[in-house]
Image (cartoon, rainbow, N blue to C red; front, side, top):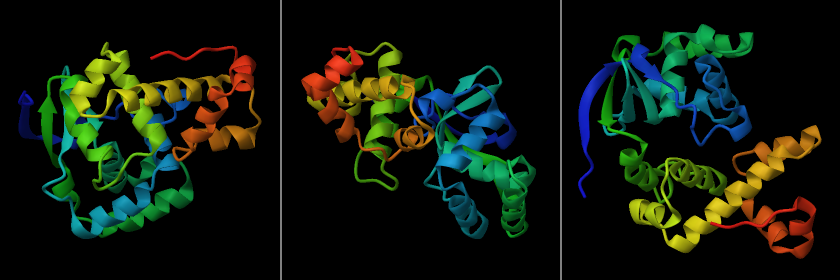
Length: 233
C-alpha cells in the first residue's frame, strides 16, 4: 500500500523533538524540549553532524519525516539533524560553556539563512512513517540503529496498538525477529528498573549495550528466577 505523505517546507521553529525517540534511553525521555536536546547531545555525535552541516549544508535527499500536532510538527525521523540545526542557529542551547563555544565556532561558518526552513515529508501518524524509518535504520543504510534502538522502535509500534504479526508485516522484518526484539526490549526496561550502581547503569543505558547478554541471562532458569518474570510476545 502506498504511503500517504506530503512533501513541503517548514520553519525550524515549528519542529518538536520526538519524546519517544528511540535514541533516547527510556528512563530519560521527557516532554521538555530542552532536555530532549541535551539527551541527544549526550548520547549521539551531534557535534560531528553539526560540523558536516556547517561545511556542506543540508543534503536534499535527507528530509525530516514529521507528523502534525496542531500548529507544530513532531519529528519522527531526523531528531539528530534537528538537534544539530538548532545548536547551529542558537549555540546557547548547549548545556555547558565549552559546548556553547564549540557550536558558536561551527555556527560562524554555516549558512544559517539556509537552515531556517527545512524540507520535510509529512505523514499522518507514526504508523504511516514506520516502513520508511525501518528501511532507513534496520537495513544496510546510512546510520544503522543498534539492536537496542531497533528493539525500542518495535516497542513503540506495539505501544501504538500493533501486534507482533502486524509489526512484522508493516516493516518487513520476520515475526521471529520482532518477537525477539520485543522480548529483549522488555528485559532491558526491567534491567533499568533495578537498583544498579552508577557504572552498571551507564553501561545498560548505552545505546550499544549488547542485548545478547540480557537474552542469554533471561534464557537461563537462574535469570528468570532472579527477575521473577516470564517473557511473552
